[in-house]
Image (cartoon, rainbow, N blue to C red):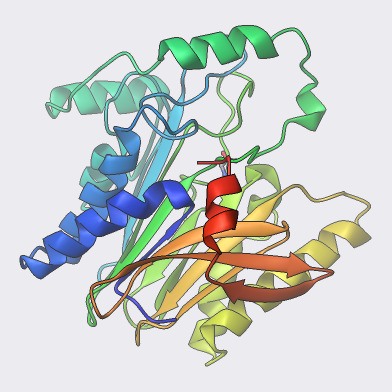
Length: 310
Ligand code: GLY
């Protein structure tokens, strides 16, 4: 697989098309990635990103986002923000500065307000209804990612520059203030235009324990092919978590090297991801894990029709 853009989850299909169109029109890789992430953030149908995301256990939507510019290694992130319409824009803004790269909650909101970013109520009626249903049976130790949706991560590479944007509401019914891997450099994403980029989706607490995105980029630095790098890092990490007696939650990763080669791996049965390829096509793939043997295929129409996730 080769491409200019790669993203986690089927929900990113239209956003990758948008990014591809922007690149065709001459946009920078940053513009393409940011606008692509915003397309997912703005869609109320997707349940763990931006508008329409599922709330924390107090019924409030708290969002995390991050951006990494592989040319400068500039990194920006916001954590636990409420009512910022497009958290990815604020994360991108912050990646231009040497200090104050990562802002939390009120501080991030104050910054966003001063910089003129749009605010909006992010809780939809559907998300509120699902919260009210879920409230009856909640076990904090069993919170799980997926259930068909999780973080959107988009990597873009124009041949000389690579960048990655990530946006999420984290775990549904999380404790207020809980932050996962997504806004943390090296865990949720990592990008270096001398090497490549990687990003992760799944249970943040488990991803953080292995700094998985940085670990994949380190493998690429040592010339491990990108698909192999994704599989090795994920398998080694899952094995380590198992040895610790800790049963790992769901984790999936994507990565791209500077030659546009793309890799993906998962510890789930099937993980959908989207590639904007070199011919201008937008292609849905699934990474499949069968008894720890990974394969990447194009899903059948029957699989797509039966897929209920985001
Ligand atoms: N991967 C998203 C989170 O755990 O918050």
